[in-house]
Length: 219
Image (cartoon, one colour):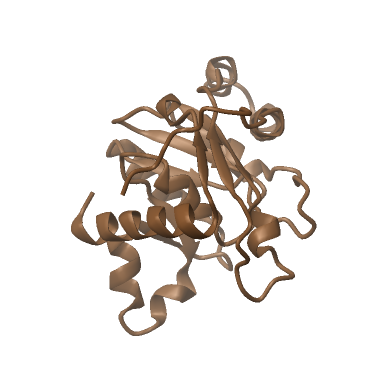
């Protein structure tokens, strides 16, 4: 972690522990080094730091390109490993940025649903996440966040002191889909993207927090 990321990591752990009574489950399922894709459900703006604070390695995040245009914001966001994505474009630059970071051995957080849930329920995954995971050999870890919609969902102006939790699942076996994608036609390839996205979302939906023994956060 660079100094800026480390300070933000320490601060977020402190705030989430004191204000949101955060619990972290099974963070050891995430590789300590090397490329990895964290695929999480999306309840609120609280999710990115929540997913990152449970890990002892830094993670790269996606954010719309317009946020980088504010004075000083671009430098700060980049120091926090935030990747600018042009949501109004064709998505090619964002995909290239994601793949480049994975090739460098970095971890990256993706939200298969594409945007925050409007009602607190899990949404259907977009096929774009399937494209990303099929094009890489990086392990894919399903991640489930709990409580963030109640704490700071779309209908809230300010975060509320509700309990939140994050759980990291075991790596998904996508080897068969990746192998088939290497030689299939374009029609089948799109089907594989869709299947990969659905498999990831199903794994997220199947996760529940353990009733006890969460990982304690120090610092």
